[in-house]
Length: 239
Image (tube, rainbow, N blue to C red; front, top):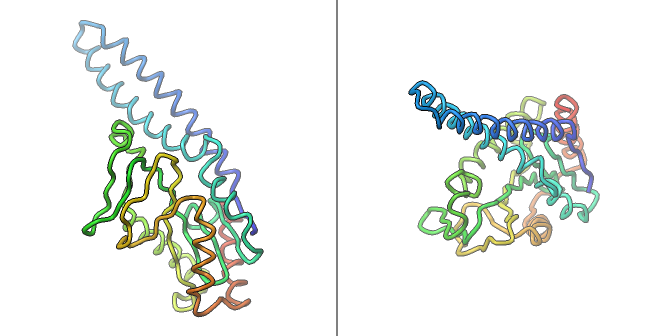
């Protein structure tokens, strides 16, 4: 497996996470000081500071979770993909979507799933049972909107490749797969889910099985060369 990674972007976003986290603590501290005042103006300032501090903390948590912690999401994926054959290339923040794996038959887009508890898909809806209530309230351990994310990712990839001279009819299939990254996450009933859900340790096996058993039209050397050139051009322009 070949790896193309935007280290510059990762470093920048890590810094953003650190700065916004410290800024949120400072703003919340100021708001706490104002809250003890009897002046209504100072109390109003405290409410404003609490709101601003909360927003900054959410931004800091978002960037810190994805770029500041080790192993990062991409490092977990890389650890799994590194044993794939040489005809796979993993693009990390170097393509129209955060994570993109170009294989011999399709484009794979792994979606990190950090929701805790039991995840299932029933009656056309995603369900999450259990998990950390406060983290769900703050939007850090929710399922999100996978279908909307899939549609958005597909549209961005299709549009970019078309702009690089590869019409949609010549583009490979785009396959998404949700990957459980939390040890306290259980996979429930997902047989009717619109997107497969796998544990991290099963990710490589799942991709190789699909590419081996369900690939009706492997990409030609010319197609792979065009796709690689287009994605490498994106990487160069955004690194």
